[in-house]
Length: 378
Image (tube, rainbow, N blue to C red; front, side):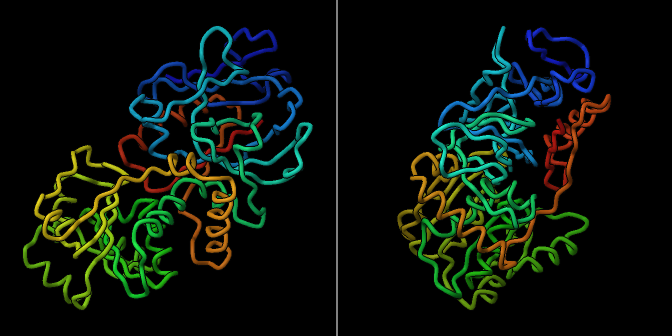
C-alpha cells in the first residue's frame, strides 16, 4: 500500500495531505528502499523551494514520463543509481523516481545567463528524479527546448527518440534505400526508429509478437512509416527467408536493432548481411543473447551495446544540444509524432496512492499500451 505524507518545515512526517497545509504544497513520488514499485512508492509533500544558489535554477515540472527503466531503478536491478533528494533526506535517504521530464524555469540563481523564467527545459543528467512538482537543478544538467512543441513531445524527447536516432546514425552509414531490421518494433524506441528511418529514406523490417489484433498493429506501424511488419512466429519459419529476399530485392541488411534478446534475436541476426552491425539496447525477454560464432567468422558481424545515459555522459553540452535540435526539427516537420499517451494527475487527493499502485502494477506486467505521463499538481 502506498502512503501519502506531508513533510512540514520541521521535517516531521504526518499522515495528512498537502492540501491541508500551505507549507507543504509541493509533491514527489518517492521511495526509501528498493522493491516492487507498487509497494515501495509513496507520495510525499514538502515546502516551497528556497531561492536557487548561483549557477542553478528552480524548475517546476509540467509532465514526467514513466519509462520501463524507471521501474528497474526502483527494483534495484538497473546500473544507474539514484541520488538522495537532499530537501527530503533528513533521517534517512529519500529517492525521487523518474529520469525524464519537461519542466519550466521559475527562478534562476546568480550567474545564470542561458536560462530565464518561463523557459522550457529537459533533463540530461541521469536519475535526476523527475516525479516531483518542483526542484532545484544545476543549469549544466538541463537543456532548453522550444515551447512550441507539444508538452508530451518535449517531455519524452530525452530517452527514446535519442536512443533511436543515435543507433541509426552512430554505427552504420546508411544510404537511401538501405534496410534496417529490428525486434520490439511496437515499443516506444521501435516506433521512433520507424519514423526516423522513413524520414531519411531507409527501409525497415519490423518484428513483433503475434496477437489477436496483429492486423491493427501492422496497419498502425505502417502508418508510421514501417516498410514491412512480421511476427516472431514467421521469423522461425524456414521459408520466410525467401519472403524477406523478395521484400528487400536481395539487398543486404546492414543494421539490426535488438531490445528483446533470447532465441528470437538469435534467429533474427541470421538475416543480417555481410559486414553488418547488431546493436542491442535491451533484453525484454530476460534471456541471454546468443549469436552463432559462424556469423563473426564468415559474415564479419559486429555486435554493440547502446545505453543513452552513457552517451550523454561522454558527450559535450554542444553535442547534446545538436542532438536535441535534430529531434526538434523532425517533430516540427511532422516526421516524429507525439507518442500515444495518457496523463495521470497526482494532486493530493485520497485516490493518489491507489492510482499510482495500479499503474505500476500494469506497467510492470507489460499490460499498458500507452506512455504514462505524470502531472504532479502543487
